[in-house]
Structures are given as structure tokens and as C-alpha cells.
Image (cartoon, rainbow, N blue to C red; front, top):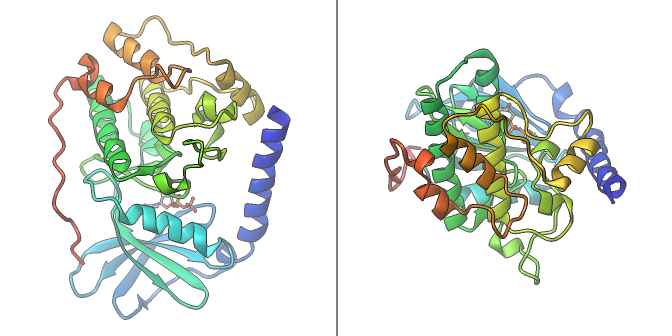
Amino acid sequence: MFKHIMNKIIEAKERAADSNSPSLMKEEELNGVLFGKYEIRRLIGIGGFAKVYEACHLLTKQIVAIKVVNKQDVTEQSLSMEAANMRRLNHPHIVKLYEVLTTETKIFLVMELAKGGELSDILVNGGPFSQDQYRRWLQQLISAVQHCHSRGVFHRDLKPENLLLDEKLDIKVSDFGWSATTEDIRPDGKFHTLCGTPAYMAPEMINREGYNGDKVDVWQCGVVLYVLTFNALPFNGPDALTTMREISRGLVWIPHWVRPESLRHLIKRLLDPNPKTRITIDEILKDPWFREGYTEIKLTSCHLKI
Ligand code: ADP
């Protein structure tokens, strides 16, 4: 079964590499003014399928991020799904999508700019951070995930690389490339797509049982909290196949020295291999370790400035 799953992942990666690398990555960097209104300032990131630029909206002077994708590199349907799912969301800890622009060959997602880069980078280069800071990040993440679920969106690829930071070091959840909505659920009431990143996949996804998007997102928040606490992944084999085998066995080792005990308890509840007994978002919001210093994150009515 694992070989079959791995072949699928490798095939998908090869398809992505074949279709992706030759076009956008070889092109010159964008510069000048786009669509008469966005002045490109600099390249800030390169993803599997996209280049992301910092730009300035000439009229309002608002600084934005513009993700540029070549139409030939992705199916237009997958990118419009990502955009449509982002459009449903409006939360202070989720990257806001402002508008989608297209030319004959390219698609441009104009988004809120997260100036602080990826959480994964700051963990490596900026730490150590206090437990209070980790708790604050988890609180912001859980609030964002709760908002996604309330709008029928499941992220399915939560990991520190997809958690961007703003200038105040607050979380901005990004990259909805693997997200799905309640409309994508199969007639049996579950999702079946194997997706995301192996070290962050929930056991029920790997075991091909069919899964609930909310349970998978909660599991991934558990992996993020584990990484924040121990600076290591809970499941980390020498290759993706071994990592997925470890996850499917469901035995997570939580170092005994972790204090307070309430933090250890929460990690255990988040990384419960059984999705039926895994902690829910409502329960997380009542958890003693999580609640410390928690003030409910208010949704602004709208933070569209453009
Ligand atoms: P892909 O979906 O092709 O992997 P990503 O969405 O991961 O592309 O973006 C590529 C890079 O651009 C990432 O490394 C990320 O750090 C950066 N990035 C993406 N969106 C933003 C944003 N809104 N603000 C700042 N940086 C961003």
C-alpha cells in the first residue's frame, strides 16, 4: 500500500516538475508597472509553481504581494480553486486575497503582503522564542483554522513554511493550493485525496480510510505545536515512505521533560491517531494551556483597502 501511495506522490511531483520548471523559472524577473496600477518592487519568493513579488498599488500606495503563475504550469482550475477558497475567507491571521488578474499566458493573485517571511525561517534563524510566543502563534493559527472551517474551507497543508509572519510577528496563514471545501466532499461524507506534505499528513489520510478535513487540519496544528516545542518533527524518517509508515503506526514520542504537563497533554490530544477521539477546535479553545492569555481574535468587517 505504501509503495502505491509513494508512487502517486512521486508521479505528482514529476508531473509538477515537468510542467513547471522550464517556463516561469527561466523567464526574466518582472519589472515595471503591471496593469497600469501595480509597480513591481522586488522578487520575494519562489515556490513550486510561482514567483511572488512585492509591489506597490500606485493609487493607494498599499504594498502587496503578487503571486505570478504561468497558465501552462498549472491547470487554471486548480489556481481558480485556490483563489475561490481564499476569497471566502476574511480573518486577521489569513493572507487576504485582494484580486485576481490574468493575461493570455499568466495569472496574478494580488494578496496581502506578509513582511516577516516564513515561520520556518524565523524558527531556524530568529529563535529561541518563549513558550508564551509559541502559545500566541498557536492561538492565532487555531483562530484562523476555526474561521476556515466556519466558511467550509479545509487547508490540508498547514506547516511552518505556509505560516507567514507580518511585521509584528503575527501569523498569516498562506498557500491554499491544497485546500478543499465542503462541496468537494465525496458522497460518503469524506475526503479521499492524499495531499499536503508527508511529515504533516494525518494517519487517517495515509491509511486511505477517507478523512474529515477539520480533523486533518487539527492534526497538522499538532505537528506545528510539536515543532515549536521541540524544534523537531514528531515523525521524521530518512525518507517520505518511512515517515509515512511511522505516522500510520500512530505512536508519537513526546519527550518526558516537557513542562508544564498541560502542554504535553495538549500535544498528545492534538496528535491522537484516532480522528474520532482527537481534540476538536471547540475543545482546544477550552484547553488550559491554550487559554492562558487568550483574548478572542476579533474579525474585522473587511480589510480590503484596494
Ligand atoms: P507555491 O504555491 O508555488 O509553492 P508559494 O505560495 O509557496 O508558492 O509562494 C512562494 C514563496 O513566496 C513562499 O516561499 C512564500 O514565503 C512567499 N510568499 C507567498 N505569499 C506571500 C505573501 N502573501 N507575502 C509574502 N511572501 C509570500
